[in-house]
Image (cartoon, rainbow, N blue to C red; front, side, top):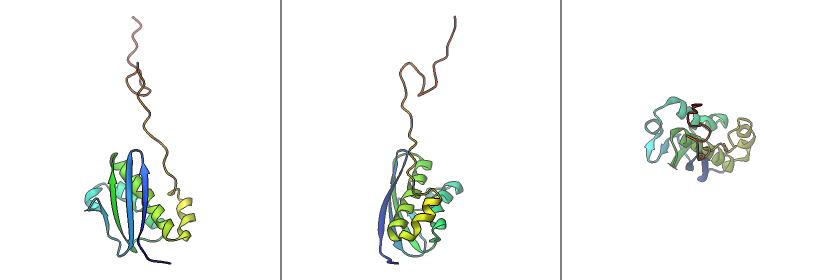
Length: 130
């Protein structure tokens, strides 16, 4: 187990997260802020920490993240993928448990484009028969 810094990038919707993993005590900073202040919602924090739990690596690494674009859910998803990828680049042993938990798959869902003659991508304008 080599303990040097590793970086990875994670994406989700329109968010891009650059993750730097270094051996440490489990401090996580996102855009220079503590995880708790960046994601006030417990659900999103749990989402971000999931790969660490799956790989039994909570408290072993300090994680620095730069994330941009998208909203909070997209950013949390991007960070999750970034951390998972960083853990795999540290050690191949992490690959199958993370893969099993579905944490190494880039979520391909994107916003569908708006079509002309319609209110949104699929919603139509109100139809009036007369």
